[in-house]
Image (cartoon, rainbow, N blue to C red; front, side, top):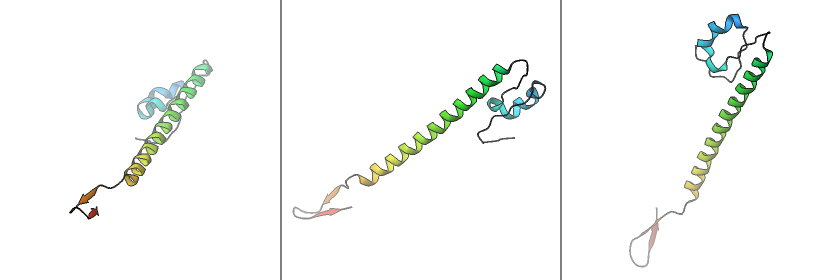
Length: 88
């Protein structure tokens, strides 16, 4: 099962072992005996999701900048004879 959505899966400890292979790092165990662990896990997952989004935005911005520079770059001239020039 491949899920490519940003999500946090929060099972109780009894189900966590069964769901771990399916969800991997998206899994945060909700243990009533240790609520701090769930809080830390959720914060870490949200930071990871935010970092991934920022990386995608940066890559998109760099691509747009590259295209802009490509289209705004001066075109080279081809000189046919001493008095005339031809642009590509």
